[in-house]
Each structure stands twice: as structure tokens, then as C-alpha cells.
Length: 457
Image 1 (cartoon, rainbow, N blue to C red):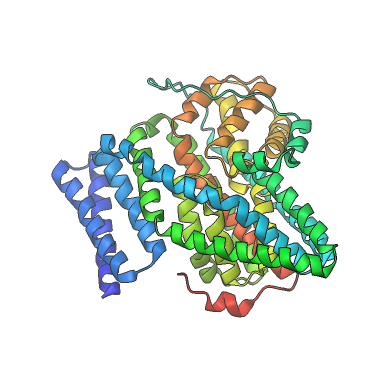
Image 2 (spheres, rainbow, N blue to C red; image 1 turned 60 degrees about the vertical axis):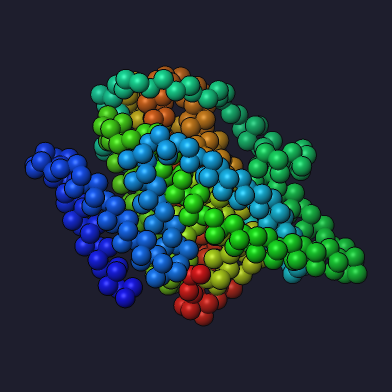
């Protein structure tokens, strides 16, 4: 029955896509009622399939389709759904600090192998910097080939206020790493200071007497397990939050705004796809990862990140799935949070691409050397923005101010930044999940049996 409904959904989707292509290209006059009816028929088929499938991932993906339709047909209603997406994000953000603290402390103090922690640290940083550098160059190559910024003009109606931004120095980047007040870091959702505090706390706990260590360690283990159960409960609300987030986006932007900026959008999506195929996929094959099961393991956290445009919202589920996929908890709890600061593949690629786009739109001819320097600056200043939706826009503004670039092209980018943020955030999550597998394999602790037997919830 599931296969029949799934096949019917595919057929309906194909017919719907053909009708819309014919209409958009003025190849045939398709009645509006037929177009709308085909979309809702697809939604009905997907809902039936999701009921039969009984998979949270299927429900999340179905809710995204429903959200797109609500945004298109009922944009005013869609704006009122924003509260659902905000509720979901707030619930997820309450998990981040306790789950990072508990899993990192257990991962470090629970094994008392401080040499391995240091070894994982330098291996992780080496891998992160190699991969993000490749992402940087792919972004620069893509925008120089497409020349998407040439001839761009500020579209009418772009009256959004730009966020305040000031150039970030290397001193600011270093100071951001260390918490001045852990409660303040938890309140602001700053992942990196929480990680630093948790690592130092875990190392301190590992060095004290076992009688004093054991009660604290058991408490942290209990907290970690409780927060994973907390995550499972919250994820039942994910289809509503994710669907609402998509509806708000589509209802606010519509589809017409893409006309002038379609070149930039396509350049980003093609560049990110190239990065996945040319960098991430070969890495997965080199470490002999069961790619099909890996895709199953990341599909739910990636879909959450895509809809909410915050990779932090996908962190709890990503950590849970990677552990079920065969990566030891001590590696998951160290690599994933650290990667959210140092391994922002999608964000790095986007920032290198967008900065050159701004220069092209302003008619400023940057040499390859200048582009590389700007890209490296962006790579440094973007550390620690994974948990904040569209924080990369603020980073881009700060860099533009540092290099004397005009701000009006960034205002144009602001109109479609939500759509670009979906893609780059998803790649951030994919890259960090893969990084945990790489380090686990490097440490000879990857569980192939779990990976081959992985079945999503």
C-alpha cells in the first residue's frame, strides 16, 4: 500500500510540475484552478503516504510542502503561523546548553583519557580547516564563472532595514571564544563559549579523585539521557514548526522576487551541490561510509535545519542520530558542537560567493588575491554563527565595511537571504555530521555494524 501511494504521489508531482512549467513559460494557458487543484491533490497524497509510513522525517517533509502551499495561497494566514515556528525554535534552544554541557563532560571525564581529547581536537581542527578552505575556493570559482552580480540593480520595494554591523577584528574573534559569564553565554545561545567551559569543566572533573568524580559524572549522564528524551518529545512538534516556518517564508517573499536575483540563488545552490559531490561525497567514500544509511541518518536534522534556517535547531537530533549511526558518544559530543563553530562549510561558501557578488554589483573589479584575502577574512569572522538564523548577513555587512564595499547590493541580497540560508544551513549540518564520522574512523572507533543496521525513527 505504501509503495502504491508513494508511486501515485510521484505521478501527481510529475503532472503538477509539467503544468506549472507550461504556465510559467507561457507555452500553454493552464487554468488557475487546475494548478491549485494539482498542488492540493499532491498534498493529500503525501499526507496519506506519511500516515502509512509513520516516520517523523516523512511528516516533516510533508509539512514543508503544506507550508509552501499555504504561503502561496494564503500569505496573510501564513504570517500568523510564525508563532508556531518561534515556539519550536524556543523549545529546541532550551536543549542546546544542557545537552552540550552534559555530553561533553561525560565524553571527557567519563573516559579520563585526556590524550584522546587533545588528539581529537587537533584532528578535528585540521579536517575542519581543510574542508572549509575547499568550500571557500568553490564559492569563489562559482561566482567568477556565473558573474551573477554583473548588471544587478536594486529591485523596487526593498525597504528592509539592514542590521547594524561593525568590522570584526581578530581580537574580537578570539575574545568570543572564552566565556566571561557562562550564564550569559547560555542566555545568548553562544555555542563556542559553552563548549570551552564544558571542555575545561570535563578536564577538571577527570583530574579529581574518583569518589568525588563519580556523583557528578552520574548526574551529567542522567542529564544527557534526559535531554535526549526531551528532544524526542519536542520533535513531535517539529512538523508544525517546520511547516509554519516555510509558510511564513513563502508568504513573505512570494516567488516573483527571485527574478532579479535568480542568478545569485542558482549560483549558490549549484556551488553547494558541487561541494557536496566533489568534497563531501568523496570523503564519505574514502572512509568507507555506508552512504545510503548516512543519508537516512541526516535526513531529519537536515530537513529541520533547511526549514528553520538554524543549524543549531538540528543539533540535538543530529547528535542522537550520529550516535545511533555508529559514532561513539564521546566523539559526537565533542566534534559536532566544535564543528558548529569551526566547520561552517555552507556558510563559508556562501560568504565568499556573496562578497564577490557585492563587488560585482557595485562595478568593483577585485583581483583573485583580493578575493582570497576577503574570503579568508570571512572564514575567520564567521566562526560561531551556526546557531543564529541569518547571522551571516551581519558578518557580510561587517566585511563589506572593512573592505570599503557599498551596502546596497546587500540590501538586495536581504530579500532572498532566507532562501539562501536554507541551503547553506543544510550543508553546515551535513558537513558536521560527516566530520563526526571522519574523526570516529580516524580514531578507529566507528561502529560499522550500527551504521549498516541504522533505521531512522
